Length: 353
Image 1 (cartoon, rainbow, N blue to C red):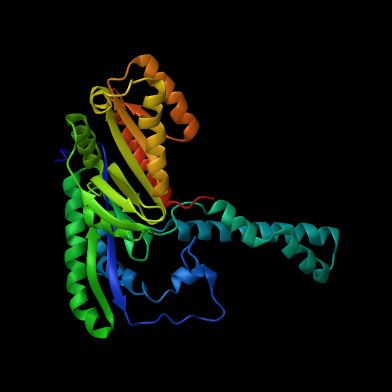
Image 2: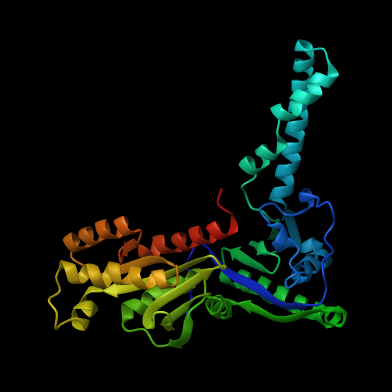
């Protein structure tokens, strides 16, 4: 079980809602009122419309518990202030060169295209961040119906999740009568199973047990950072039909997922004792095999190894780096793996340029 030794931990939370409510699309669309980095079709999508109500209403009724920092709003405010000042300066300078209001009004929009500045500058968190005032926890939405809760102690993160779930379920007793029903709140393992079910060409899944103590150790290390993972998972794929075993699967939203494969040298030698354990065999089993099954999930690969001779590890590291596989040793993975997971979470929270 997680023991909380990591300096941070995070957990997802996602609502499943059923809504008969339709968001009225204004015309023309005022893009400034829509969260930055949000597509219009996503913002006005009927199936998820209303999902954000549950958390927003929870915050509104408990404002004394949260400090809200809206990065997008602050950036827009600063950009507006900056562009207004720059517009005034440009207008004055152009007027000193060409004393014609009509000419300046034609030149100015071409000199200061506002639509260029915002995408280049506003690449931070696209939605407000909610900082709990009592517990050191940040609630960071990634969509109208999903968020991550980040903190330095698991008990704080767990308590905030429990509070949010309790209050949302209370609200559902009212909203269900008006066409907005909260079907389920997903966290931890349930969230990962939900993400997995959304992937294509998966016919069947099954779960087993860790094969050795090192595998258990790596799983427990990951659980100290997040309990939202699936371990010892076997997936049967279609087109083509094949099956793969995954020691650890962690999805970060719908677009980013990671598999983690712990490999103990002694256990590996036992598994393939009928085959000479040479460089080519190790490359195939440890790096290329992991990469192959990761590609079926369109996932990134992390391999954690134990007991490998130094020269063998160096050769494997070179191959892993060339294939985009992250290779860690048992000597340093406890410190580095949590930060790799946090980095993947950050990639989900902050859209790429």
